[in-house]
Each structure stands twice: as C-alpha cells, then as structure tokens.
Length: 487
Image (cartoon, one colour):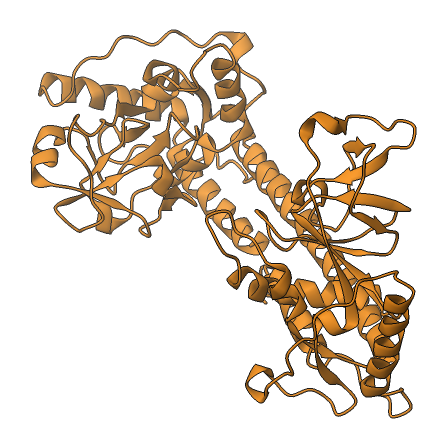
C-alpha cells in the first residue's frame, strides 16, 4: 500500500484475506468447536438418508485424497475433503430458445441462462422464464458459472429457478455455511480456470466433484465468513474514500488552473514587463524569422471579440490566440506500406497513446526506420516544444523528454514551438492548455464536427489569458508546489 498517494490494490488484499481464511489463519480456532471430522460423519449419514428417500441420486465414490493433493497445512480441527463429499452437485441443462419467455406467466419459472445473469457482486438478475423446467435449484443453492465466463458465484435467493448448462448448483447437504462456501469458491477461481478445457472454456462436473478443499468445523465456517464480510466491507469503505479523494484531487487541480488562468493564483508584480510588451517582442521576432526565411508568414488571426473573453484578467495580462504566441505545426502519418517496430531501429515515433502525465511514456514506444525518417524528417519534435493531441484522445498536452529529442510526431498531435528566444514559458503553456478555459472552447468546436479531430486552424485560434513572462514562471512554480501537495 502506498499511503502517501492512497493508492492500493484492493483486489490483491481481498485475495490475501481469502488466502489466509482458507488456511485457518484469519480467525482463531476454538477448542470447544465440534471438529470437522464429526461434521463429515453427519453429512455422510444425511446424504445416505436423502438417497434412501430418493431426494438425491447415489453418487459414484470419490477417490481418497493423497498427501500430494494437500497444498498447505490446515489446523488439526479441520479436514481435507473432496467438494463432492459435502455438497450435492446439480448440472444445468439448456432449454430451446423458442421456449423462453421474456416475462413471467402462469406456472413459469425463472431461467438462469449463464454468467450474464450474475454480476460481480453476486447479484442475480432474471431476464427470462420457462414453462417446462427440468433442472430446478432451490432457495439457498450456491450457483457457479462453469462455461464461457468461469467463476461467477451467487446464492439463489428466490424460491426456485431452472439453470442452463453454463451454471452448476452446489446444494447443501447439512446446512453448511453458505457464505463460507461462496468465499471458498472465490478463492478457488484461478484453480478452476486452470482446469478449463476446449476453445470455449468450461469446467466439467468431475472437476468440481473431485476438487480438494480445506474444511473447518461448522462454527468456525461462520466465524470465518463473518470476518471476511467485515474486512471486505472495510475495503469497500477505503475504496470509496479513495475514489472520493481522487475526484476531489481532480476538482482541486481544476480549481488551481482556473485561478491561475484568471491571474488569481499569485500576486501581480508592478515591476513585471506587461504582456502587451511581450507580445510586441514575439511579433518582432516572428517578422525577423520570416525575413530570414526560417518560417513562413501565416494567415492573420481574427481579432478576439469581447464575447470570447470568458472572465476579467489583470491589467498587465492580455487575451491572445495560441497562434500569436507559438508556432503550431502538425505531425505526420507513417507512409503507406511502412511499419513501425518495437526495436530501437532509428528514431522514436511518438503516438497519442505514448502521451501521459504531461510527458511521454517510454514503455510501449515505437521506432521508425531510417527510410521512414527520411520521408518524415520535417515532422520531428524537440525537447524545447510542447505537444498537444488533436485526434483520438484530444487535449493531451505535455513536454518532450530530452531522450526523445528529435523524435517523429504522429499526425494526431501538434507541436507548439516558441517563436524566438523563450518568450513563452512552456510549463505555463501546458497548464493553460489543460485549463477548463481551453477545454470548454475545444468541446464547443468538437460538438460541431462529425469526426472528433481538432483542426490545426482551430487550435491556432484557441483563446488563452496571457500574463507577463515573469508571472508565467511564478504561476508555473506555484502550480508545481500545489500539485506536489495534492499528490
């Protein structure tokens, strides 16, 4: 468990709890409990009586358990048994689809067709009924999905139902603790899955009957089930708290960015060179680069209308279009017939899938050959640029690690490049582009197009609030400090 971030693997903890429970290590043994060996004798006698009364069929004797089949030690009061020795197993049977009803009728019975009727919390949903049931399970029967999706477990809590062949019913012989049996099956799921055969996974009747299980005294079964339920309830509370904390973190980070874009996160310094002067410098730098033929003259951007300004900003700030302060260029698709590889062939090719946490994840990075690079060499991105995804997942924004300097960039992203000599803080720019101010603009644009792709012209026209350069740095520093506290 990572207590500093409240991240933890709840499923792994559940598995550990079940693991301890089935080894007799979750609750203490009580010397006053009737040992499992006596309980097994009672179950055997009860079974024989039910066979005599023709309530169940006589089953084939199961093989004795060998020492090799006992995977771990259990308490002295427990016994190793085969599942078939302590339950009556009911195999389901399909009923032709033409006989199914989509609502109950006179004399009809609920029909449990398979794993789709059982959710991950063990709740059963009935969607079909039949008039000619042949395999009937009764209230209190433990149900297990055994074909297709293996391992869904539930307790039947209605008077009776017909089960299809994707389901088997584990019927109690001697009022064993149902919850304990359910938890045992949940612990045994992976073992069951390993026994699945054929293209459509399935567990046979023999697999279940011959399963070797640890069997505690009846009183201890109840104590174990109660303790598991208590611990699982605590885990659910922790999970809920973590989910709420995660939502709160998102809200707080959004609020921090909102304050930052409004000029309310840090104080303004009257000695800062105002953004209007900075914009003139950027404009002059752009003209110089055009004169030197290093960049092309771009189409003029429309003036910002008053209704495009969503809130008031400090007097030293300016409203600008993104294309006024940075150069916006697209990436390029891999040429037809060419393929990227996992090998470090020549140059990395950054895809939207690689863009994570305002950076690039190296884990699944793909590489281009020299032949590909030679065709796409005009579409590289450097560690001095910012990326912004414009298709697929739109709005991913971040910087390029030094190790990926000069990598090729996907056609589904744009690179944002400073015009001139660091006249815009990349860190501030990333934060500004992650703000609701920008996201809301892009949502409005995307709602008007059939394909979810943000055109480069639309990206260039994105309106952002723009502070003095010195204040950009102070804002970026403050956001970093607050983010560290939240994480």
